[in-house]
Amino acid sequence: MYCNKILSVFIVYFSLNLSHGQKDIKFFRNDYIYLEATESFYKINSLTKNFFDAKRACSLEGASLWYPENKEEAEAVISYWNSTQPTWWSVTLGMSDLIVKGLFETIDGKRVSDVYHNWNLGEPNNSGNIEDCVVIVSTGKMIDISCNIMNPFICKKTLQSLEWNQQCNMPDLDYKYNEKTEKCYKIHPVPLNWTEAYNVCSSEQSHLPVANDWVVINTLVKLFETAPKEWNAGSYLRGMYHLGIHNRFNDGWQTVKGTPFNNSLALWGTRLNEGSYDQCGAMFYTGRLTQVDCSLKSFFICEHDRVDLTSHTKNEENLPI
Ligand SMILES: *[C@@H]1O[C@H](CO)[C@@H](O)[C@H](O)[C@H]1NC(C)=O
Ligand SMILES: *[C@@H]1O[C@H](CO)[C@@H](O)[C@H](O)[C@H]1NC(C)=O
Ligand SMILES: *[C@@H]1O[C@H](CO)[C@@H](O)[C@H](O)[C@H]1NC(C)=O
Ligand SMILES: *[C@@H]1O[C@H](CO)[C@@H](O)[C@H](O)[C@H]1NC(C)=O
Image (tube, rainbow, N blue to C red; front, top):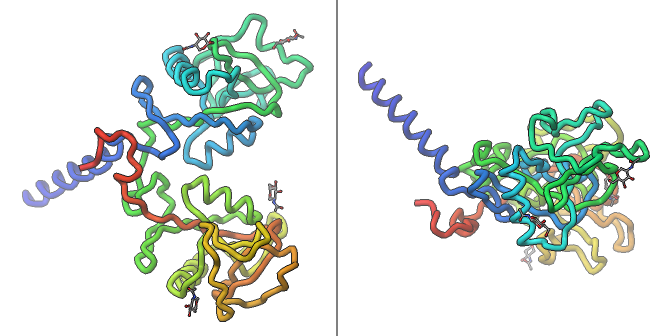
């Protein structure tokens, strides 16, 4: 009884300690920097996107499209952006009036009047009746614009919301460790085309699986057994999953890691000719490989290589013990 109590106190202490581990390191992803002033991670995206694509890009990385909570955060982030991207005029914010015209809300459902709302004089003015999105300019003023305008954007992740998948050594808790391959896998239940699937895995710091040996192939076959096979929201390639092999450069089959694919015939199911449009790899549930048209949708699995924590820790003084 008494012993149990001590044990549970110990377990609580221990797990608190573990969950605090990652927060102490203050590491989310290599491509995000940590600002102490706001206790959050940010990524400055110089590849411009419209509001919808920017919002999605942040979300795929486990973060969200940035908006300032308050004046302090606006200043801290703009000051960082000023020092790294001095030529930028504005960035798209994670707010819009797309749900109810005229009611500007953040993407997590707060009224903009309850967060930072330093509108430029005369804004928002819904010019041309098409301005449902918002940018902030480097002076800290906000202006409404069309959601289709391509702009730089910033993704944000709060330290508070950071969780860590210890086994897979990554923030995404949906990845499951596999002992046979010593890699982690996440099953994606919505079919996408090969290029989109590639992008999703890449955003999750993973890649489509490279099935060039039997251990991986057998592992994938096992995963397929538990994975979804039916989808009723459009057409998709039945009975197979995307693989991380392709001939997109038209110079021979290669893996998504840029290495030549060992084109050992034994692994192929249906093999089409080289000149075909089918330049992407897929795998039947049985483990046989095939070539498919890259624009066709299929279910997919992302594979994550565990990386040594210390090798992707930026703040050297905060190395994990
Ligand atoms: C950022 O740069 C703009 C334009 O040079 C300047 O007006 C603004 O005060 C700067 N903001 C911060 C927080 O450094
Ligand atoms: C709305 O504001 C923009 C600046 O963002 C300005 O160019 C435009 O003339 C204004 N339109 C109206 C109808 O006031
Ligand atoms: C390719 O795979 C086959 C069959 O598994 C193996 O015998 C061969 O050595 C491999 N070739 C290379 C270059 O790895
Ligand atoms: C895959 O889907 C995306 C988004 O729908 C589309 O932009 C892209 O062109 C498609 N890729 C191919 C190879 O068809």
